[in-house]
Length: 214
Length: 214
View 1 (cartoon, each protein chain N blue to C red):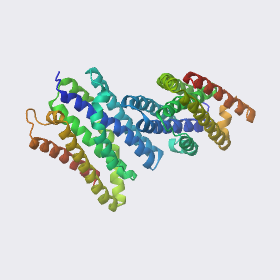
View 2: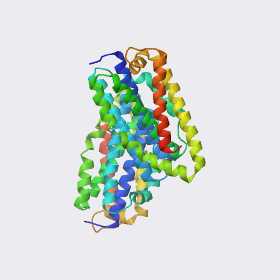
View 3: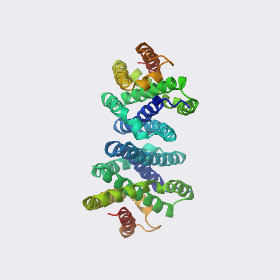
């Protein structure tokens, strides 16, 4: 098993990302859903995030790490991101869920490229849920068709959301060099490689924006 | 199958109770838990509530009822109860989870006593989770041992919580007579029988208070 100290960091940041996504989606669903069925649909996604959190936490425990200590270094950056990107209406909540889950899955994929098989397995389990956020796509597209002005507003808002994610991500990468090194191509530890990873994440984000029609 | 209109009301009130418990526990966990492990423990209970919501919603759909319409009449009373009983610290959050889950399970038991087998089955599935809130007991007992003043405060607060529940419950019973009739002994529809049911619920509540040591 690859026992690089970066592994615990990686599982820790993903675990807190899932736990905080669970909390925030549940809250967004209760505050903003226009119907109880919509509230349930977003809550369902939140519960799936919780299941991922559970996998990551249990993996940390198996590795002999304390899940709380592993998550703690990343809580502030992720909480800050959620505060900066708190949705104010239902379409924003859906865009955030779709975009946020997408960014997280991209990180899992980056991690799976270069990590030990035991973590690659966990990544497969998480990626099996990939389609869950798709329900947001048709609802956002319908909302944008009904109100084209909303489309422009959502596009700007999604850009801000990914900008804040990149900014928090770079802050975390600077504070946790072992994690950053693990996520770049093996052996490379230069800033250019990190930038290329962020470029890949940005490109995937653009595809999601296109899918949403914004 | 017992197709009394009260069945849809009963499933509707329980479904919204589970959905709102899921939302509120998730929020309480994020706001008040002293550690990420504690936050996860209460979130775990919240996710179990969501699973109960899913069972109830699917049962409503099978019966040909619209889950949103079935839940809607009860949303205001349950939301009001949550607003009136929002915990302000971690021990209050634990007491609320333990007491709230306990009251809900008592309602399932009252319902199981006199409903058709298809609903009795669902009640069995929910009651299989009965032990999940037990983690709160030792934590509250430890908290009260460490700070006896907290015990008195929590006891008063739990009394207020059950008082608000009875008050909202009586309001719902008055507004939904078919539901109230279904919950009292078969054939009886008098206020005395409803009062006896509330007395049973209060007695179970006292036992939970004793278990918590408050």
